[in-house]
Length: 123
Image (tube, rainbow, N blue to C red):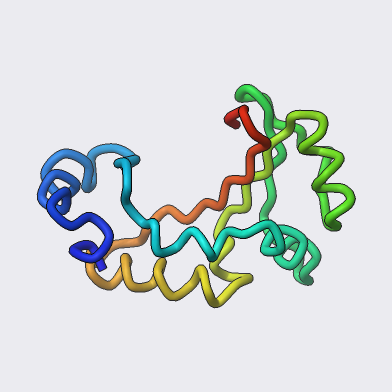
């Protein structure tokens, strides 16, 4: 999995990031972009039991807001709010497979967060 995602940057990931700091390297994980299409949000957020969701903007947390529908998500995006789903792989097998593969290869628990942020902003 690491070789496929990182290619030549694999060694850099292991030496500079692994167990040290979060990793965000350009051109990695492209094959997984299809897993985070728009329809995943209402599909996960509408599930029971409810997923662990954070609604944030500029580092501020809005605990009173818990979106569950596509309409609510669009409203939040229009208000420039971001949605973070912790442990999203528990609610979607497409996300679960790569997370499990990373955990197996690294022999460690992987922090699993799905961020949804309206363009051109960040959480």
